[in-house]
Amino acid sequence: MTVVCVASLASCANPPAGPSHIPVSASSSADNSLSSRLFSDINAYRRSQGGQDLQRHSGLDKLAQSHSEYLRKHRGNFSINGKNVSHFGFDARTIVAREHLNMSNVSENVAASPNARDILPLWKLSKDHHKNMLDNWIYSGIGVVVDSDGMIFATQIFSTPNLSHRSTRERFNRF
Image (tube, rainbow, N blue to C red; front, side, top):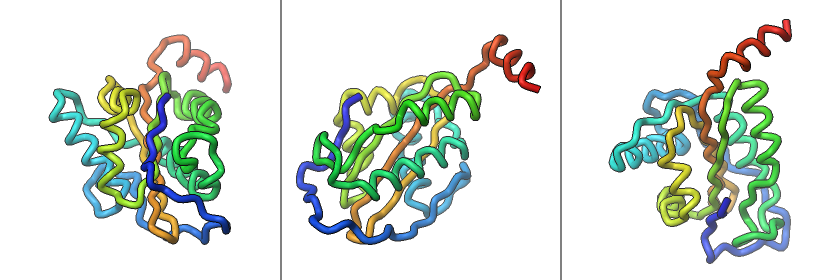
């Protein structure tokens, strides 16, 4: 996976202060939270490219939100583009999505930018992130954190439900 980041980001010498609290929505209905606006913009973009709307999934929202909070907390410490984003822990998020949310395929996009309007264009400019946005996913979750200096960290997780007969049987055998 390719990671996209704004090139003009600067690392802080001191640990960043706590994040600003912004509304984060896990509902598919319209609201004014940054995560919901980003989710709506991505669905609008998918429609403009002939794709179907993604369904918002609260479990994936929680995984994405947790990762965005991790990115904020550890900003400046990653060894890739701009040092503010990473897919660290993706394997664990995938396991949670598969084992606890009954998902099959999982992918994610991450970005950091001082401007919320830059997140979607950053993902569009990256071949891998763009592919993730337009692939044939069913569900998605978005997590957004705004740090005290206004830096925005966004994670979007994409997934499809596991509809295999074997998977269903295995879940019932746990009881």
